[in-house]
Image (cartoon, rainbow, N blue to C red):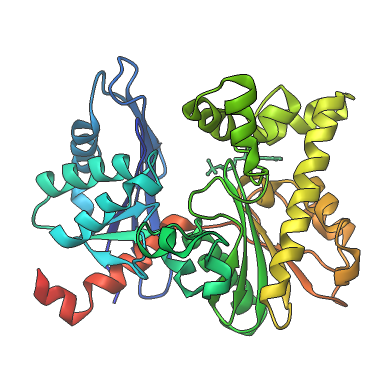
Length: 399
Ligand code: ADP
Protein backbone atom coordinates (compact mmCIF):
# COMPACT_ATOMS: atom_id res chain seq x y z
CA UNK A 1 0.00 0.00 0.00
CA UNK A 2 1.39 3.47 -0.78
CA UNK A 3 0.53 6.61 1.13
CA UNK A 4 1.50 10.28 0.63
CA UNK A 5 4.77 10.78 2.51
CA UNK A 6 6.46 14.07 3.34
CA UNK A 7 10.22 13.52 3.11
CA UNK A 8 12.37 15.91 5.12
CA UNK A 9 16.13 16.37 5.00
CA UNK A 10 17.21 18.95 7.60
CA UNK A 11 20.61 20.59 7.43
CA UNK A 12 21.93 23.18 9.89
CA UNK A 13 20.39 26.11 7.99
CA UNK A 14 18.30 24.40 5.32
CA UNK A 15 15.45 21.94 4.87
CA UNK A 16 14.93 19.95 1.67
CA UNK A 17 11.42 18.59 1.40
CA UNK A 18 9.32 16.50 -0.99
CA UNK A 19 5.76 15.29 -0.77
CA UNK A 20 5.74 12.00 -2.63
CA UNK A 21 2.74 9.93 -3.58
CA UNK A 22 3.14 6.57 -5.31
CA UNK A 23 -0.01 5.85 -7.30
CA UNK A 24 -1.29 2.27 -7.63
CA UNK A 25 -0.11 2.32 -11.29
CA UNK A 26 3.42 3.07 -9.93
CA UNK A 27 3.29 6.66 -11.26
CA UNK A 28 4.89 8.91 -8.64
CA UNK A 29 3.72 12.48 -8.06
CA UNK A 30 6.09 14.80 -6.29
CA UNK A 31 6.01 18.36 -4.93
CA UNK A 32 9.42 19.44 -3.71
CA UNK A 33 11.44 22.39 -2.56
CA UNK A 34 14.07 23.84 -0.31
CA UNK A 35 13.98 26.21 2.65
CA UNK A 36 17.36 27.91 2.93
CA UNK A 37 19.30 30.51 4.94
CA UNK A 38 17.20 29.65 8.00
CA UNK A 39 17.74 31.98 10.94
CA UNK A 40 18.87 34.85 8.68
CA UNK A 41 17.06 37.84 7.17
CA UNK A 42 17.41 36.13 3.82
CA UNK A 43 15.51 32.95 4.79
CA UNK A 44 13.24 31.73 1.99
CA UNK A 45 11.45 28.77 0.48
CA UNK A 46 11.95 27.83 -3.16
CA UNK A 47 10.14 25.00 -4.84
CA UNK A 48 7.36 23.89 -7.12
CA UNK A 49 3.64 23.49 -6.59
CA UNK A 50 1.51 20.47 -7.52
CA UNK A 51 0.87 21.91 -11.00
CA UNK A 52 4.59 22.52 -11.49
CA UNK A 53 4.44 26.27 -10.95
CA UNK A 54 7.44 27.90 -9.24
CA UNK A 55 6.95 28.72 -5.56
CA UNK A 56 9.11 31.38 -3.87
CA UNK A 57 8.39 32.75 -0.41
CA UNK A 58 10.43 35.05 1.83
CA UNK A 59 10.35 33.87 5.46
CA UNK A 60 12.75 36.36 7.13
CA UNK A 61 14.42 35.02 10.31
CA UNK A 62 12.33 31.84 10.26
CA UNK A 63 13.78 28.91 12.22
CA UNK A 64 13.32 25.21 11.37
CA UNK A 65 9.92 25.01 13.07
CA UNK A 66 8.54 28.14 11.37
CA UNK A 67 9.84 27.00 7.99
CA UNK A 68 8.24 23.55 8.43
CA UNK A 69 4.97 25.17 9.44
CA UNK A 70 4.99 27.28 6.25
CA UNK A 71 5.92 24.30 4.09
CA UNK A 72 3.12 22.22 5.57
CA UNK A 73 0.55 24.98 5.15
CA UNK A 74 1.27 24.74 1.41
CA UNK A 75 1.05 20.97 1.38
CA UNK A 76 -1.71 20.18 3.88
CA UNK A 77 -4.37 19.92 1.16
CA UNK A 78 -2.52 16.82 -0.08
CA UNK A 79 -2.87 15.21 3.35
CA UNK A 80 0.50 13.58 4.01
CA UNK A 81 -0.02 10.48 6.11
CA UNK A 82 3.55 10.04 7.32
CA UNK A 83 6.83 11.91 7.57
CA UNK A 84 10.13 10.33 6.52
CA UNK A 85 13.31 11.92 7.87
CA UNK A 86 16.68 11.44 6.26
CA UNK A 87 19.15 10.78 9.09
CA UNK A 88 22.83 10.49 8.19
CA UNK A 89 24.05 8.38 11.12
CA UNK A 90 22.01 5.63 12.72
CA UNK A 91 24.91 3.96 14.57
CA UNK A 92 24.25 0.22 14.39
CA UNK A 93 20.54 0.50 13.47
CA UNK A 94 20.02 -1.75 10.48
CA UNK A 95 16.77 -0.47 8.92
CA UNK A 96 14.34 2.44 8.78
CA UNK A 97 12.65 2.90 12.15
CA UNK A 98 9.45 4.43 13.43
CA UNK A 99 10.47 7.41 15.58
CA UNK A 100 9.97 6.56 19.23
CA UNK A 101 11.73 8.16 22.23
CA UNK A 102 14.16 5.19 22.17
CA UNK A 103 15.05 5.64 18.48
CA UNK A 104 15.46 9.41 18.95
CA UNK A 105 17.87 8.64 21.78
CA UNK A 106 19.83 6.27 19.50
CA UNK A 107 20.12 9.10 16.92
CA UNK A 108 21.33 11.44 19.68
CA UNK A 109 23.90 8.84 20.79
CA UNK A 110 25.27 8.65 17.23
CA UNK A 111 25.85 12.45 17.16
CA UNK A 112 29.59 12.27 17.97
CA UNK A 113 29.94 10.16 14.80
CA UNK A 114 28.16 12.74 12.59
CA UNK A 115 28.52 16.05 14.43
CA UNK A 116 27.60 18.18 11.41
CA UNK A 117 24.51 16.21 10.41
CA UNK A 118 22.68 14.50 13.28
CA UNK A 119 22.07 17.66 15.38
CA UNK A 120 20.31 19.28 12.39
CA UNK A 121 18.19 16.15 11.84
CA UNK A 122 17.22 16.19 15.53
CA UNK A 123 16.12 19.82 15.19
CA UNK A 124 13.83 18.83 12.33
CA UNK A 125 12.49 15.79 14.17
CA UNK A 126 11.79 17.86 17.25
CA UNK A 127 9.93 20.49 15.20
CA UNK A 128 7.81 18.00 13.22
CA UNK A 129 6.95 16.06 16.39
CA UNK A 130 5.60 19.24 17.96
CA UNK A 131 3.82 20.43 14.82
CA UNK A 132 2.33 17.12 13.68
CA UNK A 133 2.01 14.85 16.70
CA UNK A 134 -0.71 12.83 14.99
CA UNK A 135 1.47 11.77 12.01
CA UNK A 136 3.67 8.66 12.20
CA UNK A 137 7.31 9.63 11.62
CA UNK A 138 10.13 7.44 10.40
CA UNK A 139 13.91 7.85 10.32
CA UNK A 140 15.71 6.46 7.27
CA UNK A 141 19.45 6.18 7.87
CA UNK A 142 22.30 6.65 5.36
CA UNK A 143 24.24 4.06 7.36
CA UNK A 144 21.60 1.30 7.54
CA UNK A 145 22.22 -0.26 4.11
CA UNK A 146 25.87 -0.92 5.04
CA UNK A 147 25.05 -2.87 8.20
CA UNK A 148 25.36 -6.05 6.10
CA UNK A 149 29.13 -5.47 5.73
CA UNK A 150 31.15 -8.34 7.18
CA UNK A 151 33.50 -7.65 10.12
CA UNK A 152 36.56 -7.86 7.88
CA UNK A 153 35.17 -4.86 5.97
CA UNK A 154 33.90 -2.78 8.88
CA UNK A 155 36.67 -3.24 11.47
CA UNK A 156 39.74 -1.00 11.60
CA UNK A 157 43.05 -2.67 12.47
CA UNK A 158 43.29 -0.85 15.81
CA UNK A 159 42.93 -2.18 19.39
CA UNK A 160 39.67 -4.05 19.88
CA UNK A 161 38.43 -2.08 22.90
CA UNK A 162 37.97 0.99 20.69
CA UNK A 163 35.36 -1.01 18.81
CA UNK A 164 33.76 -2.89 21.70
CA UNK A 165 33.61 0.04 24.12
CA UNK A 166 33.54 3.08 21.85
CA UNK A 167 31.90 1.86 18.59
CA UNK A 168 34.92 2.85 16.50
CA UNK A 169 34.30 0.99 13.23
CA UNK A 170 33.43 1.67 9.62
CA UNK A 171 29.74 2.50 9.05
CA UNK A 172 29.51 3.84 5.50
CA UNK A 173 27.12 6.49 4.15
CA UNK A 174 25.01 7.28 1.05
CA UNK A 175 23.32 3.94 1.75
CA UNK A 176 19.93 5.12 0.48
CA UNK A 177 21.49 6.10 -2.84
CA UNK A 178 23.65 2.98 -3.30
CA UNK A 179 20.63 0.81 -2.40
CA UNK A 180 18.38 2.62 -4.89
CA UNK A 181 20.76 2.70 -7.88
CA UNK A 182 21.98 -0.89 -7.46
CA UNK A 183 18.41 -2.14 -7.17
CA UNK A 184 17.43 -0.10 -10.21
CA UNK A 185 20.41 -1.22 -12.33
CA UNK A 186 19.90 -4.90 -11.44
CA UNK A 187 16.22 -4.58 -12.26
CA UNK A 188 16.91 -2.85 -15.63
CA UNK A 189 19.46 -5.59 -16.36
CA UNK A 190 16.76 -8.19 -15.70
CA UNK A 191 18.29 -9.62 -12.49
CA UNK A 192 16.44 -7.83 -9.68
CA UNK A 193 18.72 -7.63 -6.62
CA UNK A 194 21.03 -10.24 -8.12
CA UNK A 195 24.71 -10.22 -8.93
CA UNK A 196 27.60 -7.92 -8.13
CA UNK A 197 27.53 -4.17 -8.65
CA UNK A 198 30.08 -1.46 -8.07
CA UNK A 199 28.34 1.83 -7.39
CA UNK A 200 29.95 5.30 -7.52
CA UNK A 201 27.89 8.08 -5.92
CA UNK A 202 29.70 11.28 -6.94
CA UNK A 203 28.30 14.54 -5.59
CA UNK A 204 29.69 17.11 -3.16
CA UNK A 205 30.25 14.07 -0.97
CA UNK A 206 31.29 10.96 -2.87
CA UNK A 207 31.53 7.28 -2.05
CA UNK A 208 31.78 3.87 -3.69
CA UNK A 209 30.01 0.67 -2.70
CA UNK A 210 30.19 -3.05 -3.53
CA UNK A 211 26.72 -4.62 -3.63
CA UNK A 212 26.16 -8.38 -3.87
CA UNK A 213 22.62 -9.74 -4.30
CA UNK A 214 21.14 -6.47 -3.01
CA UNK A 215 23.38 -6.21 0.07
CA UNK A 216 26.25 -3.84 0.76
CA UNK A 217 29.47 -5.80 1.35
CA UNK A 218 31.87 -2.86 1.49
CA UNK A 219 31.96 0.87 0.95
CA UNK A 220 34.58 3.61 0.82
CA UNK A 221 33.33 5.88 3.62
CA UNK A 222 34.14 4.82 7.16
CA UNK A 223 33.36 5.87 10.71
CA UNK A 224 32.62 9.32 9.30
CA UNK A 225 31.93 10.58 5.76
CA UNK A 226 35.57 11.75 5.44
CA UNK A 227 37.16 8.40 4.57
CA UNK A 228 37.48 7.20 0.99
CA UNK A 229 37.59 8.97 -2.36
CA UNK A 230 38.31 12.64 -3.18
CA UNK A 231 35.24 14.89 -2.68
CA UNK A 232 34.28 18.56 -3.17
CA UNK A 233 35.97 19.86 0.00
CA UNK A 234 36.82 16.58 1.79
CA UNK A 235 40.22 14.95 1.36
CA UNK A 236 39.14 11.31 1.45
CA UNK A 237 41.95 8.96 2.55
CA UNK A 238 45.16 10.47 3.88
CA UNK A 239 47.92 8.95 5.96
CA UNK A 240 46.57 9.01 9.56
CA UNK A 241 49.99 10.30 10.66
CA UNK A 242 49.26 13.56 8.84
CA UNK A 243 47.37 14.68 11.98
CA UNK A 244 50.45 14.19 14.18
CA UNK A 245 52.68 15.87 11.61
CA UNK A 246 50.53 19.01 11.45
CA UNK A 247 50.08 19.17 15.23
CA UNK A 248 53.72 18.55 16.14
CA UNK A 249 55.50 20.33 13.30
CA UNK A 250 53.16 23.16 12.32
CA UNK A 251 51.58 23.76 15.74
CA UNK A 252 48.02 23.20 14.49
CA UNK A 253 45.32 22.12 16.91
CA UNK A 254 43.12 19.14 16.12
CA UNK A 255 40.12 21.31 15.17
CA UNK A 256 42.22 23.03 12.52
CA UNK A 257 43.26 19.67 11.10
CA UNK A 258 39.65 18.55 11.08
CA UNK A 259 38.50 21.75 9.38
CA UNK A 260 41.23 21.53 6.74
CA UNK A 261 40.41 17.90 5.88
CA UNK A 262 36.62 18.45 5.79
CA UNK A 263 36.26 21.97 4.39
CA UNK A 264 39.43 22.97 2.54
CA UNK A 265 40.59 19.83 0.80
CA UNK A 266 39.33 17.62 -2.04
CA UNK A 267 38.74 19.34 -5.39
CA UNK A 268 38.93 22.73 -3.68
CA UNK A 269 42.27 22.00 -2.02
CA UNK A 270 43.90 20.55 -5.13
CA UNK A 271 42.53 23.05 -7.67
CA UNK A 272 42.86 26.05 -5.34
CA UNK A 273 39.76 27.25 -7.20
CA UNK A 274 36.50 25.56 -6.34
CA UNK A 275 34.78 22.52 -4.88
CA UNK A 276 32.39 22.54 -7.84
CA UNK A 277 33.28 19.95 -10.48
CA UNK A 278 31.90 22.08 -13.33
CA UNK A 279 34.23 24.96 -12.44
CA UNK A 280 37.22 22.63 -12.12
CA UNK A 281 36.50 20.98 -15.50
CA UNK A 282 36.14 24.41 -17.18
CA UNK A 283 39.43 25.60 -15.68
CA UNK A 284 41.21 22.43 -16.79
CA UNK A 285 39.91 22.94 -20.32
CA UNK A 286 41.52 26.39 -20.22
CA UNK A 287 44.82 24.80 -19.22
CA UNK A 288 44.85 25.51 -15.48
CA UNK A 289 47.49 23.04 -14.21
CA UNK A 290 46.04 22.76 -10.68
CA UNK A 291 42.59 21.98 -12.08
CA UNK A 292 44.11 19.35 -14.41
CA UNK A 293 45.83 17.75 -11.42
CA UNK A 294 42.62 17.85 -9.33
CA UNK A 295 40.79 15.88 -12.03
CA UNK A 296 43.65 13.40 -12.38
CA UNK A 297 43.70 12.72 -8.65
CA UNK A 298 39.88 12.57 -8.44
CA UNK A 299 39.55 9.97 -11.23
CA UNK A 300 42.60 7.90 -10.30
CA UNK A 301 41.58 7.65 -6.63
CA UNK A 302 38.03 6.83 -7.63
CA UNK A 303 39.20 4.02 -9.94
CA UNK A 304 41.52 2.75 -7.22
CA UNK A 305 38.63 2.64 -4.75
CA UNK A 306 36.43 0.74 -7.23
CA UNK A 307 39.23 -1.73 -7.90
CA UNK A 308 39.73 -2.26 -4.16
CA UNK A 309 36.00 -2.80 -3.57
CA UNK A 310 35.89 -5.37 -6.35
CA UNK A 311 37.59 -7.71 -3.81
CA UNK A 312 34.23 -7.88 -1.99
CA UNK A 313 32.42 -9.29 -5.04
CA UNK A 314 32.51 -12.86 -6.35
CA UNK A 315 31.54 -11.52 -9.78
CA UNK A 316 31.01 -8.07 -11.32
CA UNK A 317 27.82 -7.57 -13.34
CA UNK A 318 28.39 -3.89 -13.73
CA UNK A 319 29.41 -0.43 -12.61
CA UNK A 320 26.92 2.34 -11.81
CA UNK A 321 27.52 6.11 -11.83
CA UNK A 322 25.20 8.43 -9.92
CA UNK A 323 25.14 11.78 -8.04
CA UNK A 324 25.56 15.22 -9.65
CA UNK A 325 28.99 14.35 -11.13
CA UNK A 326 28.28 10.69 -11.93
CA UNK A 327 25.01 11.53 -13.67
CA UNK A 328 26.22 14.56 -15.60
CA UNK A 329 29.88 14.22 -16.46
CA UNK A 330 30.63 11.86 -19.33
CA UNK A 331 34.22 13.13 -19.12
CA UNK A 332 34.72 11.98 -15.52
CA UNK A 333 33.09 8.60 -16.29
CA UNK A 334 35.40 8.08 -19.26
CA UNK A 335 38.51 9.19 -17.42
CA UNK A 336 37.76 6.92 -14.45
CA UNK A 337 37.08 3.83 -16.55
CA UNK A 338 40.33 4.44 -18.45
CA UNK A 339 42.15 3.59 -15.18
CA UNK A 340 40.47 0.15 -15.02
CA UNK A 341 41.58 -1.58 -18.26
CA UNK A 342 41.97 -5.02 -16.61
CA UNK A 343 38.25 -5.16 -15.69
CA UNK A 344 37.20 -5.49 -19.33
CA UNK A 345 34.85 -2.49 -19.32
CA UNK A 346 34.07 -1.37 -22.87
CA UNK A 347 32.59 2.11 -22.65
CA UNK A 348 30.56 3.29 -25.63
CA UNK A 349 32.03 6.73 -26.24
CA UNK A 350 28.98 7.81 -28.20
CA UNK A 351 26.50 6.36 -25.69
CA UNK A 352 28.39 7.95 -22.81
CA UNK A 353 28.43 11.44 -24.32
CA UNK A 354 24.88 11.28 -25.68
CA UNK A 355 23.25 10.78 -22.24
CA UNK A 356 21.61 14.09 -21.42
CA UNK A 357 21.17 15.62 -17.97
CA UNK A 358 19.12 13.49 -15.62
CA UNK A 359 18.80 10.62 -18.11
CA UNK A 360 19.11 6.98 -17.18
CA UNK A 361 20.92 4.59 -19.50
CA UNK A 362 23.44 1.89 -20.21
CA UNK A 363 26.67 3.21 -21.73
CA UNK A 364 28.80 0.13 -22.45
CA UNK A 365 29.20 -1.68 -25.78
CA UNK A 366 27.46 -4.85 -24.59
CA UNK A 367 30.51 -7.12 -24.54
CA UNK A 368 31.90 -6.71 -21.02
CA UNK A 369 30.65 -5.77 -17.56
CA UNK A 370 27.71 -3.36 -17.85
CA UNK A 371 28.11 0.38 -17.24
CA UNK A 372 25.01 2.26 -16.12
CA UNK A 373 24.20 5.89 -15.38
CA UNK A 374 21.30 5.94 -12.92
CA UNK A 375 19.97 9.25 -11.53
CA UNK A 376 19.70 8.67 -7.81
CA UNK A 377 16.41 9.12 -5.98
CA UNK A 378 17.12 9.24 -2.27
CA UNK A 379 13.84 11.04 -1.55
CA UNK A 380 11.78 8.46 -3.43
CA UNK A 381 13.55 5.67 -1.58
CA UNK A 382 12.98 7.39 1.80
CA UNK A 383 9.27 7.80 0.98
CA UNK A 384 9.07 4.14 -0.03
CA UNK A 385 10.79 2.87 3.12
CA UNK A 386 8.68 5.21 5.29
CA UNK A 387 5.52 3.86 3.67
CA UNK A 388 6.68 0.30 4.35
CA UNK A 389 7.40 1.00 8.03
CA UNK A 390 4.12 2.75 8.79
CA UNK A 391 1.93 0.25 6.97
CA UNK A 392 3.42 -2.73 8.84
CA UNK A 393 0.74 -3.88 11.31
CA UNK A 394 3.12 -4.22 14.30
CA UNK A 395 4.43 -0.69 13.83
CA UNK A 396 0.94 0.75 13.45
CA UNK A 397 0.03 -0.77 16.80
CA UNK A 398 2.89 1.14 18.44
CA UNK A 399 1.23 4.39 17.38
P1 ADP B 1 25.11 16.87 -3.21
O1 ADP B 1 26.15 15.86 -2.80
O2 ADP B 1 25.22 18.17 -2.48
O3 ADP B 1 23.70 16.32 -3.32
P2 ADP B 1 25.09 16.76 -6.12
O4 ADP B 1 24.84 15.30 -6.17
O5 ADP B 1 24.05 17.68 -6.65
O6 ADP B 1 25.54 17.28 -4.70
O7 ADP B 1 26.44 17.01 -6.95
C1 ADP B 1 27.04 18.27 -7.01
C2 ADP B 1 28.26 18.16 -7.92
O8 ADP B 1 27.83 17.76 -9.23
C3 ADP B 1 29.02 19.46 -8.07
O9 ADP B 1 30.42 19.23 -7.96
C4 ADP B 1 28.68 19.88 -9.49
O10 ADP B 1 29.71 20.61 -10.08
C5 ADP B 1 28.57 18.51 -10.16
N1 ADP B 1 27.91 18.62 -11.46
C6 ADP B 1 26.63 18.97 -11.74
N2 ADP B 1 26.43 19.03 -13.10
C7 ADP B 1 27.63 18.70 -13.66
C8 ADP B 1 28.10 18.60 -15.01
N3 ADP B 1 27.31 18.82 -16.05
N4 ADP B 1 29.39 18.23 -15.20
C9 ADP B 1 30.22 18.00 -14.16
N5 ADP B 1 29.84 18.10 -12.88
C10 ADP B 1 28.57 18.45 -12.63
